[in-house]
Length: 257
Image 1: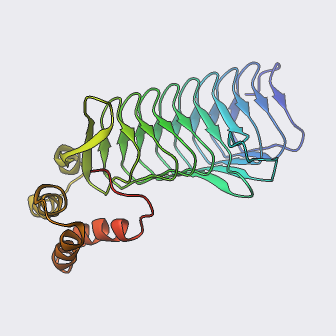
Image 2: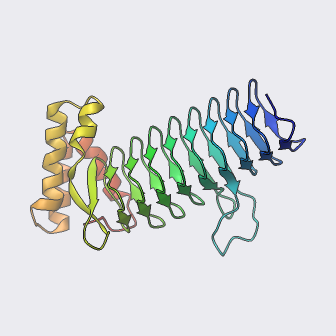
């Protein structure tokens, strides 16, 4: 299951039933879990830990150095969970200055996507072709990034959010939001991700509460502090709104508006 032309460092650790295609390179300090498939012409640099049953397509570059100019070769790592699909020409960098880039489970990371140093990606996400994260971005569970979407460094996208094609994000996106591009490609709120929430089993009552919170935050045209106080009142009885409020309270960047 290891092609004769693959180059695998003697210190690399490969689990049971791992396959490695022709001309792939696996460097030192790389661990790959059981059942993972590495296609031809893949490069994996360490320190990197990859879980079980992942599929990595041709010409992906996994675990490369941070692209931050301040990076001076400090030890950093990449940690990838289980059951992820990583398609052709995807690039995923390790963390910087002793940190880590972390990716959860059951993600679809499609062709030419880029995940930079220090990013935290949850589980069950979809990165469509050419979706790009700058450094230290956080992506919640069940987020969908459409093709050519880009996220500025240190921004966060909350769980179950949908980011439209070509959107450029320079602020935080609370959970459950739908973001689309305006004329200058900057992302703007366009309601909540109702269809996605329905597909994931959210009841009409839960969706109604989330929609009410969205209107409070984005439609009511009231001062932000007043909107936050109203969200806190709703959150006392609505756990999903509490998740939105907690996300906002933890933020260091402004919200996408």
